[in-house]
Image 1 (cartoon, helix red, strand yellow):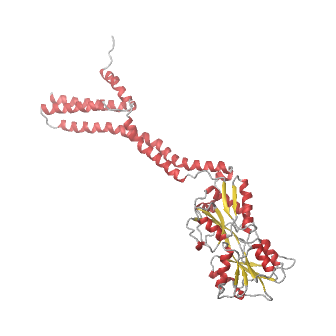
Image 2: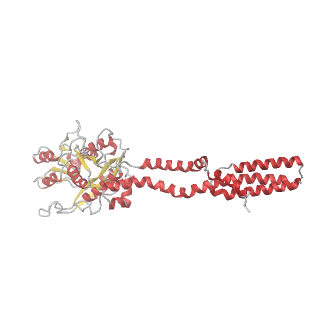
Image 3: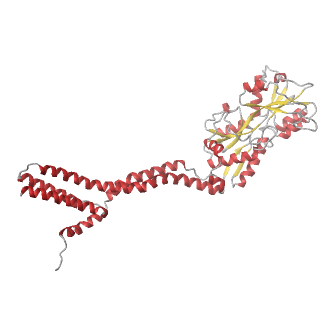
Length: 452
């Protein structure tokens, strides 16, 4: 006997194509918020992705032959090993460096700046990568006997370096604190000579005293004057008083024989005062270069010297300039894993890729689980909505109804079934649809029996 397909099966086959059709509107509504989050994550990440670090930067250093200039040359050699070219731009000294760094039009990225100059320019857009060394204030003078106060230089000819140097600013400040202005009413003559020119003038007795510091002179100038007959190095016996007046100064104790053991120079413990030199950068310095410069400073300034202990510099000593966030992070945790184990340019690329991938991974991993669940929930809600209508209709059927009312209820039931048949659902929801239709038939039977 030939078996005819069951009517429900025929209806199911007719209905199945509709089940297999996905609703792109539902997919869009479900995926839309997720895609929006992905776009926001990419935008947010792009705000923090730094471009590739430049392969060339410029440092403003100091006069030719100065300690600043020789230090910049050492930086240049070390950075070259990493593939970064350091252009050295000579200057008059710390103040000149600071003015260039504060000027957006000046083509410089970093510079050496001594303490005590921040008030000279607007330095709000500048950051410190740390203090890198002390630069002592050397005051050489000619006198038959030692002097104990700078005020005793009143009426003398004093070389205070060229304008634009930190030496000039600090020398003028120290002399002013001792009542020496160098103006018309004052017989003191302040001469703008630095480095070798100041040394030669003192040796030739053209000046009576000279201020020498690292941003305007080399240590060779100091060494020569220490050996010059009749020239003395000033002992800051009032060093503690100077430190109270000038908070950016530090006190340095120089034991006997430190400069020359054979000649016992100095003959007894000497006290000097010194500001620290900071490596100052503009706020747009690339973080990778910030790390590299601090590493370079550690290699150059990390050893013990006459004025510092091993490992004392570089140091995140915040004086007049805020330590940059990149420098703070470096001093706390050092170089990142990539920069410790990969070449600089490869590490930089990895670093930028990670900045983009991390927020995406944070969103995508939960998203792969959440989006299917949300889609299933949305599809289920369509079926549950029909169930709500069916329950309301069945409750109405339980009450005493007239034939006209039952006919209206049956018509509403047919409408509910029609909406179920036209639902756009994936095939995985077929069992729930067929179960709902069974329940519809159950309610229809109840209504038909009630009418019979």
